[in-house]
Amino acid sequence: MSSIHFRLLLVATLVLMGFVGITGWALETAFRDASKIALQEKLQSYVYALLAAADVDAEGKMQLPEHLPEPRFSQPDSGLYAVVTTADGKLFWRSRSSLGIKVLDAPSIAAGQTRFQRRDGFFLFSHGVEWEDDSGNNQAFAFSVAEQVQSFDQQFSRFRLSLWLWLGGLAVALLLVQAMVLRWGLRPLRQVEADLKAIHGGQLQCLQEVYPRELQGLTSSLNALMEHVGAIQERYRNSLDDLVHSLKTPLSYLGSVLQDKSTTGEQLRPVMMEQLQRMDHIVQHQLRRAAVAARTTLVTPVAVAPVVERLLTTLEKIYAHKELEVVQSLNPTAVFRGDEADLMEVLGNLLENAFKYANSKVRISVDINNGLLVTIEDDGTGIPSGQWESALQRGKRADETVSGQGIGLAVASEIITLYGGVLEAMEAEAGGLKLCIRFPVTDPMLIPTT
Image 1 (cartoon, rainbow, N blue to C red):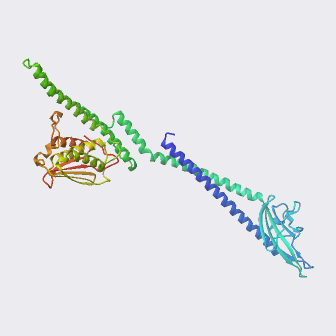
Image 2: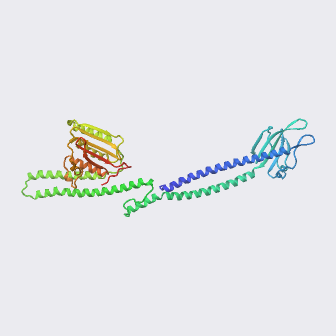
Image 3: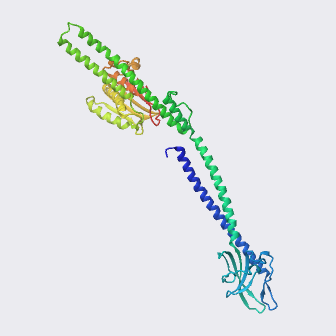
């Protein structure tokens, strides 16, 4: 059951079948109850008609006419029967329609009471009365009217057949409509599948269709993931180009030294060690750049405040001799949607530079302002405003890296750029350097870009 369309259609079918079944049962029950009530009222009216037709004979006793207004009482085996019994259950009178058939055993019933029941293939309504004759004697009678159940059952069967035919037809029609609605509703998913196949075949570069709002998060994430994969490949190519370009200089220098016949073995040794260390540093740096570029975007958000607190604890121990005042304002809800190691690299570089060059105070704040905002200030000598832009940029060649504040800024700026953020440098109020890190609004994932 891997098809969403099949799953939804199956669930809709089961729900519809349950609804139709309950509806049919409820309508059947309501119709049966209403029919029984109508039949009871009809039989009761016949009893009242019998009471109205009752009269007294010459001796003052009750008598009933042979012919009643309802013609079915006069037709043999008509299906409608009437009997009158005495208190001890003896037959006192019966309609002509009951001649030739077994007389109903009418129940004994007290005067003023009524009873409606189904038994022996009949619906029977009985009403107890007390008749006073001319001599003042009271005698109890039970007036009973019965109708065969065949007509009621046939009527109910016709209603049931008609009901289920209509409900079944409506259920089939609704299922067809539901299937068409599901097909129309799931069409965007099929479009996404077709577009992904087109991307796999090289006809498209990304998902370009305008999709429903419910799929925009998925398609945006897929586009971002494909863009990120492309960025990784491009980054690796650039890293290899930078590595080749950076290794040319030390290799050329080593070649020229080795070709110089006047260079002795003692002179060659330190030169070789220096250039080998330089090449090792170049390789390690390029590998680190490639690793940062290859971070996955599908990561759990990292709380920023604990990371800052751990870094401050370490740096305060390292620079304890400077007795710096550290002012911090950390929003506990601020998170970084990326790799924790990259966050440590960025904040570690920038905070270390602040501790290194501060005279007496370092200030750091972490807040949420249209995204993640981190501000780091010191009261050191700062960087001249004309050098801010160059200090935040790393040259194309990795062998330009040397120790110092500018390099820390460049490394941090490169990682921040990979995560779509911005690093800004400006003069602090205390005269030192103020750095602001701004990451965009935190979507379900923060997508690094090159």
